[in-house]
Length: 147
Image 1 (tube, rainbow, N blue to C red):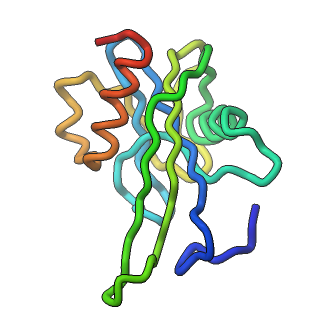
Image 2: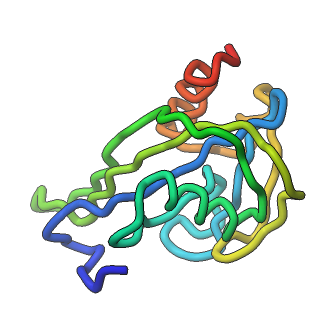
């Protein structure tokens, strides 16, 4: 991992996300550590130097939820940029989301998450996900041919 600061970075941080489906349900995690502690989101985290993007996705998924998935497909890429009052980039994350189908394991909270849930499409509103998370889930359904 880099020692570069996340606040006022000199380059974007690469975040890797996993959008996993078990039939119609999508896997969600409640963040147990900053940033966004207590909020529901998709499993994922920072890519390590020397680690391929898909390797990072599988590692984060194992660390956070203890599950395994089959083939991964690139589903969604977006930039999360927060600016300060002066318009400077306070935070800048480029998020690469992979979509996959659940293969094995019982989802349980690990590493930096406090809770996991399999949410059906009509239940997603209760999890107060970001707009980007909703967009990523929709893109993942299309990428996997689920919609």
